[in-house]
Length: 123
Ligand code: SF4
Picture 1: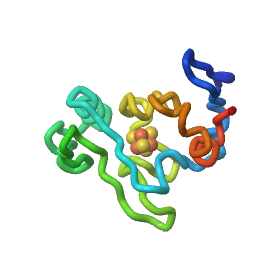
Picture 2: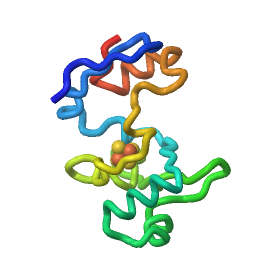
Picture 3: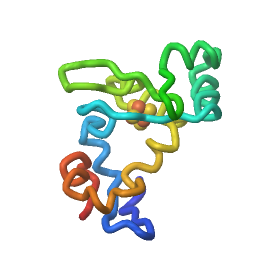
Picture 4: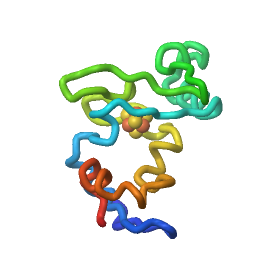
C-alpha cells in the first residue's frame, strides 16, 4: 500500500490507507456526477466483458456535457451504480475522475468539505 500522496499545487495530502475503512464514502452520499469519456466506457465494458453499447445503456446516462455513471438510491443516499458490497466493482477500470480524487481542480477552496468527506485527506 502506498504512503502519503502529495501533488504540486494542492494544499493537502492524501493517505490511501484510509480507503480501507471509509466504506467508499466518496462514491455514496450526496448525489454527484461521475463523468466517463467514450474511451473510459469502452474500457469499462471490456473490463466487465460486456458489449459497449449495452454497458453504456445499463450503467450510464447522457448529460449535456458527457456521460455520467448512473446512481441508485439507498439508505446512504445516492450511490454510484458501480459501488458494490466490497467497494468499486470496476476499480481497475474506473474513470479518471475517480482515479484522481481528491486532487481535483478547485479542491483547495473546498477543504472543509474534503475534511468531512474523505477520511484520507490530510489537511
Ligand atoms: S466508478 Fe467506482 S470509484 Fe468511481 S464513483 Fe463509482 S464506485 Fe466509486
